[in-house]
Image (cartoon, rainbow, N blue to C red; front, side, top):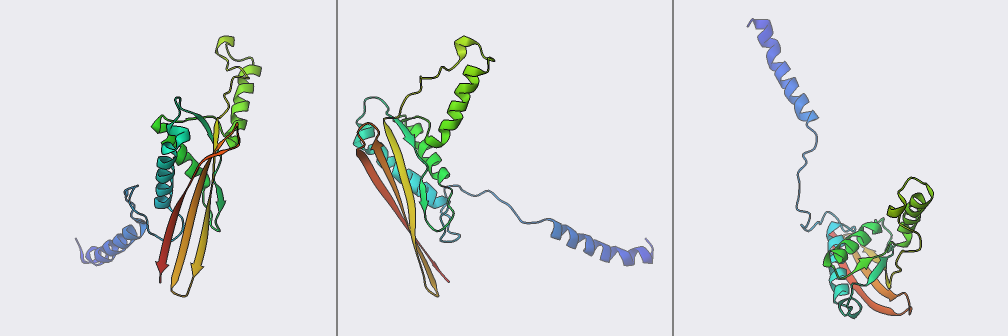
Length: 196
């Protein structure tokens, strides 16, 4: 190696090293999905899990569900977001529905938001002429839900110079579709405080 190559070698190595470090980007790793998430006081994954687990457990212990001989048919409306922050409430309803279905104590009819997809599928099968007659899902055979589940999430936010306090309350109700009676209701409260 001559002197000129040696002289250019060290800066080239340093420059290449700096370039590789700069291009490596952020480090990503998997975390425990059940670990407590405390990045800030906004609604987060831990809140979702606490709400879904508490509401599912309580609903499954209710007389309307646990006292039923057959798994009742239920429909689940999207949770209403009454907070000042964006919360994907469909994730809450999906998580609660999944846990209830896994219990085997409840069956679900399509919800209002899913009904259009159901009617589109029935029309496609019955009107397209593409399907074997004996395999078509006939119209008029859907089962009505005995109960509907409705809920909401609300928050109260208080700020001072050094403290931000957020109180969340999640409510869920089970309504008998035939009688209009409220058969079960529960709530889950969460308080989060952030200091500067």
